[in-house]
Length: 411
Picture 1: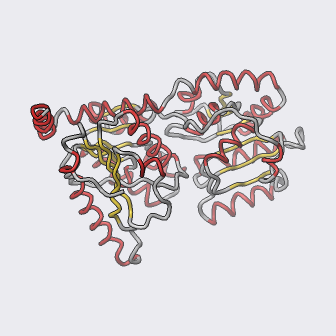
Picture 2 (picture 1 turned 60 degrees about the vertical axis):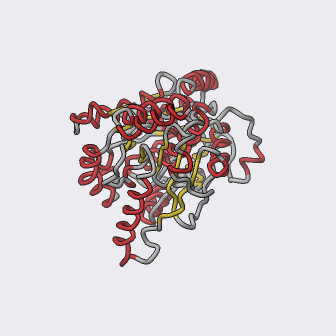
Picture 3 (picture 1 turned 180 degrees about the vertical axis):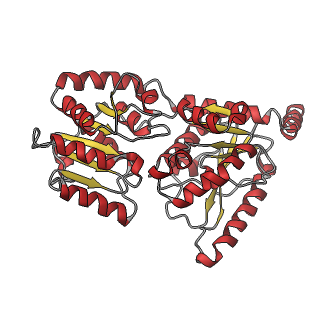
């Protein structure tokens, strides 16, 4: 799909919204947010035009719905930061930023859905989504030096520069205001939702066997790279109840990331003698994960800190009973539809999992409550609140007012 410039659509589109490049691989919370948001915006606002910056020769191509949408255009202009090797990384960053500023001048508003991609010096209003402040608040639970440095140095500047700041939970909003009270007038909470692909379904035993899984099993979905996810604590809790449930499996779905993390997890499995009872699956697509949610006996998600906790909603919408943390954003997401525990208390976590595994009545109660809780969240609501944020910042744009008035007079 060819890029569309303002001159080609200004007479047919009320607003032109630009996005920085997405991660089309869709294996992270940020990517899920960006893609689901855009897909819903394209449907709800056909009179608007949406432009997306992409890289040349993307490894994972944009989804078909994005390429085929009449009110969406792609700009395959950016280079990978390491396209010419490390020595040219700074030059490529400068080149990409300069190109972004030029393309953005054709838009009315820009939405940066990942603050790591924020470009300063944009001539139009910029809306930015800040998913959490975890690298700033809890660097010992993040352990990615570049991200920690970015949040310490760049996030304060981004909050000052942006026209509007979106956050995905009331918890994150409270943390942003704690550190940056001056951001109050810019702040908007836009909670997330589970994608339509997650729903209750029958999953045959034969399907599970191809992954080395059998019922009953405890499921975890999420990154295993960060200490804040508490995967090692989950392994310890599972080891406590394994003697009571010798047939019970633990299935971990997600990316381990570095070799160091991989070594720690497998060493923990060996030390706890869990190697035969734990399956680790990396690189699954959304449909596979949806099937595992629907088949699991219980979904356990025990992080120490979370900006939102989308896997909790995905599990609930799939009809899976949930055990999760009682900290940060997770009570806000789970409501009274999950068993909430102190993630630092391994014994409490273990007993919560065991209680669900051994009680079909509790499983049924949690399934019913989970479906009701997940129904309170929707991408339509998220997209509408986001669109209202675009309109608010554009209400202060003299250029847009002049163009809309001109279009109205022509009509």
